[in-house]
Image (cartoon, rainbow, N blue to C red; front, side):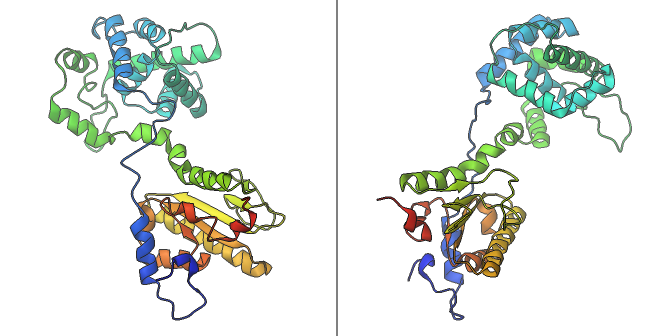
Length: 339
């Protein structure tokens, strides 16, 4: 049986089922393994922040802005530990801070503070009068106020964000858990509500998505092929949306590459539609460049009809991580290979 790259897709009798099955067999899920990224915090580092916070607050008996600030200055990661106790994301903490203290902190600033701490989690720092330091101090003030209040809403239809085992009654809930630990079923329930690794996965989502783009660049670079990698939201004449890669460039394209890793079938369907649009633009222009899809993730395995459409739009030029090494040889990119 010929490779899917060699099939005549103009033949009305072409059988798509085995071709779809072939691509499906190459696609695997990526959600189990994630890149660590620069800002990943291991447990040992996190635990040092926790111990600093516990020490400065006298085992959470004396929780006030000054004691929390002292912990953060000694071990900056203590700020993220404190955020974990509150159960907030950085933007949520910024919003609460603005409400309680009147100090406006936008989402970008909150995320920047969080990331900078994760990059230097154990490097001691001072809290002075700079804008960033004042924002951190305001966040701590708002956080302490929120923690001491505990879960203040008592409406059956409303779930308060601090209605958690360690913060439901403020310090009265936190202190015994800090001393005695958390029963395993309670830990599992909190994990059920929060999803394991959710925050980290969100923080490295761009790195996850770059797996396919990185593989493409490795192949093109190894073959010494000239290529143009477009920027996010870049406008290219002749295209509604710029493809990820143009070989060699937009002035005289021989190949366009759309790249996508997704675990979601809805996102995969959107990508298929985008590739089909590239094919329509090629047909309308009367040009003969290749339209290529490089994909990964289980999202593309959900709907066989979507994969059939993708194969048809690319004339079989659908490459996965396991067939990426065939990208140059089975497309017009080979015309630009430097031997």
